[in-house]
Length: 309
DNA sequence: CGGATTTGACCGGCGC
DNA sequence: GCGCCGGTCAAATCCG
Image 1 (cartoon, chains in turn cyan, red, yellow):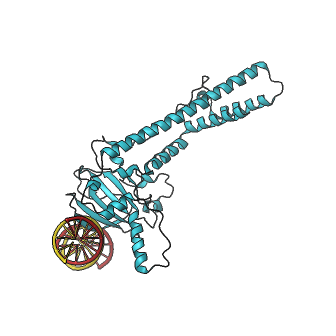
Image 2: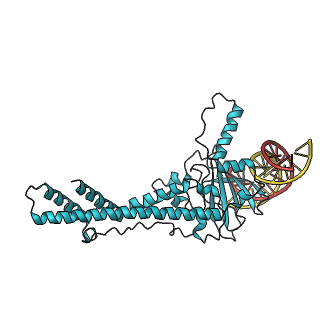
Image 3: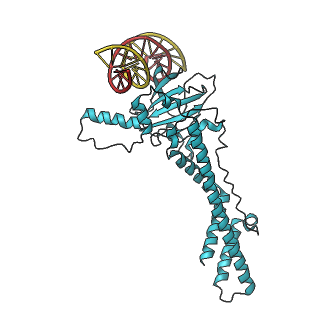
């Protein structure tokens, strides 16, 4: 899968000033320049030409600020466009599972109603009731992951780093492909379950439905604690934010790196705020890691400070 | 030999 | 109440 198309190019070309100051001068020189400007401001006997240079610098920085603002606006617009495209894609490819009239009420409810945090006021209820409540809570933590595999690969294995024990397989009515049932076997008390079934429309797409939340750390996290990006440790799972650790009902199809007409397995419920959150986080991470952006930010802040002086 | 997987039986919820 | 269907159980089987 090609995720590069999802990555936002953060190499912002912010060197918009006519003097190409930041492009040619190292960061340190920029800062020195800024300090010297400050000194100049403090001098009581300001020469005409230095005042002119200062005004010009001020103008330049203001222009840069303006450009930054414009770029930010443009970025927001791009984001909105992307989001719109995503929503349109979701609408065009409604999940067959949800369109099925035979769909059980309970399951569809679980998928569409975002529930809050686990209720903790179980002290007054009986064991049976608390057990029931717990069950309901587990059921509310549902997420779905779409994973593209080789069409020839008939195994229903989704490698996500956790250890799963298969406890059943069933052929369901709305899908000729068998559905496999897994329980998390990494921790004996872990309540998480996973259902894996091939997509009706695209046999090369595996649909993994996670129920519940792991009550133990991710196995790969126990081995690799320094990894900054969890997606890198998830084996063959697409870079997805919809693992069980995410809030309920998040369903993301990151397999859409192929043409949108190819995969048709998403549901309208993906219009949850989850998607923007993921994108925003991704953008923020990318931006903060980009030296160009940081340099531009420094310049912008410097400009702002100059403005205030 | 022990753990994982397979697979038919069973259970319970839901719709008619 | 009955039948259908998804989900789970557990004995049998497989595999390292």
